[in-house]
Length: 354
Image (cartoon, rainbow, N blue to C red; front, side, top):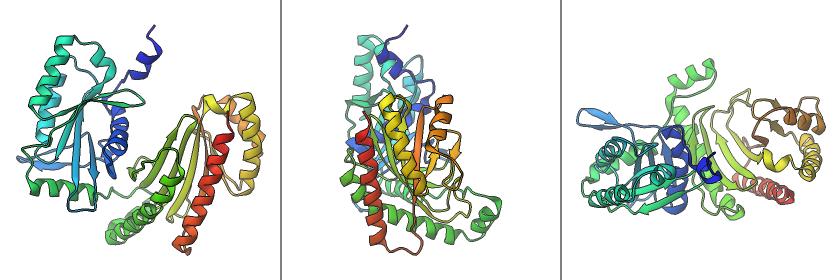
């Protein structure tokens, strides 16, 4: 049976590595724009074809002196995977200042010392950085050297592709048709939504235990911009949905705070009692409770006990408490004050859990 560490480092698919590398670029390289093939895909034109970086990050994205990082990965070193990965990374060097290759830490441990030295030497000669990824962190084995292949116009082109990214509108058919016809309206709403969340970033960063936060994108359930702070007991997200989401019937721009608690934390006896009391007060304030598949809305007739009993019958790994913050017709100072109050309340509850 593999050890706990080995289990933590196993990755079934390459895409499972991406979010950890995104977080590395945010926290260790101070990137304020990050994305990946799964969270924010885009393509670049080259030699009559296209390439799609696995992960990318922009540092100082609003400055002329921005820095562009890209990364290419595989889920194992075995066979030709390293050679394929380094070839793809070399192509990315035509667009980015710094390029990494990344692999699971478990795969690194499985190869010989001679192979490790050869891989590091080759990366060094090619100016490539090397990252080893576990489920909770990235280990930078080798720092990249600034690419000698990148041309300024290609770099600017790549930045424009990233910063002007606007996914196909996801929503009901009627709204989708509207924004397809009036794409400038959709883009204007998206830009204003981004600016609002960007203005709240300092408040979020100052309050959260994780001090570096970058705005990220998600398009799985709708167009979402979000800030996240990851803690041992769970995660706190501040999210902006320019066109609403699965909880929004009318599709209006929605600002929301989501507190996501790990099952292993909240199922402790003392914590269940604390959660029950907290949910009772949340229900009165118009809170949504998500059990990872089943959602309870504030206008439903339910009790905190019923929610917890339902959660204990599921195998959901987490429970989320979701609060919407009114923004339409509200000035930004008042929005910031409301966000600060709700974030502080959320952190207070996190700290009550053992």
